[in-house]
Length: 390
Ligand code: SAH
Image (cartoon, rainbow, N blue to C red; front, side, top):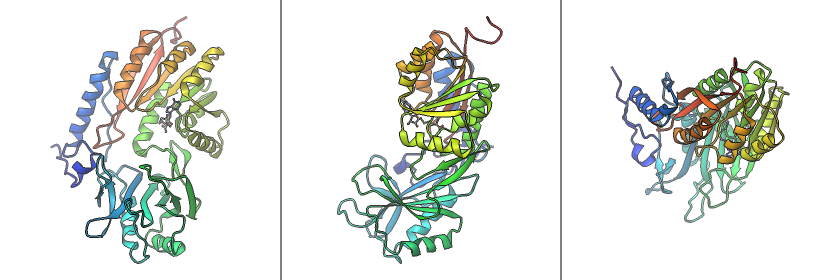
């Protein structure tokens, strides 16, 4: 029998989980239908790969801190499209241990005389708490986001917190004194441990700092990246581009089966993390270039460079014309397109299949149970350079 999903008490106000009250099997069926709606004109869409346990999968948990009308400290999420905090005690998709740590911190504020920040009056100190956990290493980072770098009795606070949760491996104070909807400010002060955690994906180690981009569902990330590697089916001789590489995870994983890999990414902080990740894993056949992926591809195409495989993982908006056109000029044997939006994927596939490419495989993966997002990994092959053709 299909289990009916229990409903979270703040589902409506939060708005994150659109599939509240829908059984997991039905969620998967709906995602399959949505994906097919956009993509079946390009061929067969494989059955979506779901999670064995679709709860508490998020390795990054954020709570805003404030007070309710009675003056009690609350922590939770901002109500959809507003700045009112809705108290959350048991989110169904966030890591349990991280939520427990947030509850502990909430309980400690009074005895440490730490006030939550009030946006209207500008009074108080603590704005947010962010907890990130490396699921495969067990390392935990707590980030206390405050308006001022002065945190009273900070050493005792860290000591008391670690007494309750000895599994915390680092504590960072992040100073955010701006009126902004961004959670983190620019300044990090390490209060305990190294200031970052590590996690392992496909046997490789990745460093996660307070603001680094890292996939939030590590279990399904391995499934997704595994499919991407299976589709690329590299032999060790290929030159590979990892476009929109973020902190370099896909390219670094691919480097073991490639001659060399070039990652390109707009965000300079992510490039710095990517380079560090390559060094940490002692990988020498990968390099990372900061800049626009379209600009980079144009340069490669103009210089007549030869590339066998392009792995691409653009944001929701998909790729731009410049990128797609230079991809057609560069004419790699294979393109593996990882997409978090089947609508823009369909648009970009229409452009690529009009010319030299054939869609060979499309595999949806459920990265975000309970929400309506779908991730798809797609393999395209070049008609002109397909093996067995001359
Ligand atoms: N492949 C990575 C990150 C994918 S997220 C991973 O799996 O972890 C998409 C990335 O594209 C983001 O890091 C974003 O900064 C980057 N990006 C967005 N527009 C870009 C552009 N025009 N050129 C290069 N990178 C871009």
